[in-house]
Length: 90
Image (cartoon, rainbow, N blue to C red):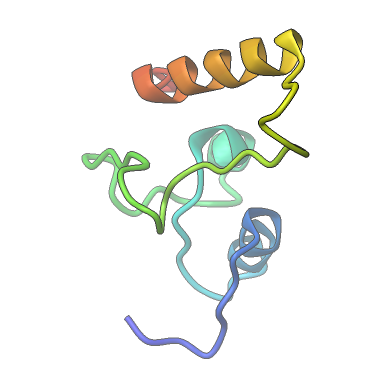
């Protein structure tokens, strides 16, 4: 697919999709309300997509690995497990 818009921010991409600028690959949790209201349409409901490579991965930024607070480590572990198992949104 070729396009004139290149966006790496999910919220901006979501807005473009809602404004009718074309299809977008977005997280279920971000578009659930729009799908329910009919503002967006799931073009491929039979397919599931997961973050499996650099292009679709989730990234978490924090100041340093040295002296990482326990609550930060717990949150990272929680997110890792949550995204690994994948919530059932349907």
